[in-house]
Image 1: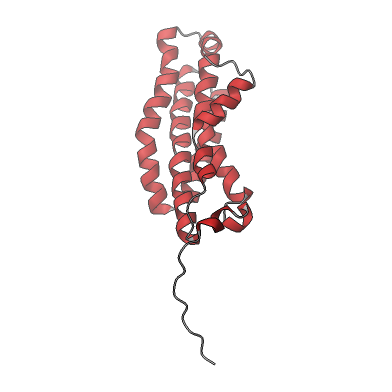
Image 2 (image 1 turned 90 degrees about the horizontal axis):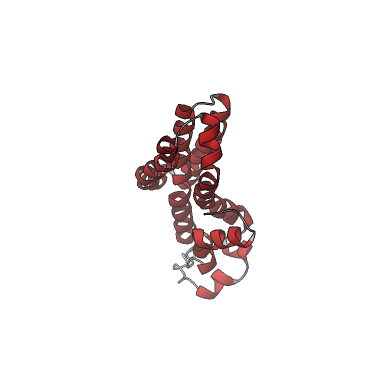
Length: 177
């Protein structure tokens, strides 16, 4: 008995919205995808609130302290397109995890070396690390939809935007500027 080759099926849009686990967008896939892009807006909000105490602890003026904000933005602007290219080339999971390891290391750096230079280096590394999250998330979502031959659920893309998270932080009375 020979098996006949089945022609490829056309994607069924209703199948994409059955259940998250059936659609390939379950919690094991979605939680890291939503967590990563959240880091950059939270980090920016945190530094804005903590800039005055940090500058006091390090004994620097506001003209130097502003570099803690600017360095993150500059590093992010350069790193995000680069991380997107790397995610396409080496895989989104590897680049996402590399970015999160960079953020983890950068988080400990100012505690280990409490100087302005270490804080500045830490901010640059955090900018590079968090820049891996959004491009890697978009690449992973694209790969998942291509693999499953289904359209991307709108809530998945909507959850990757920073606006819902910002509104949640504001609702929880986070001291944002």
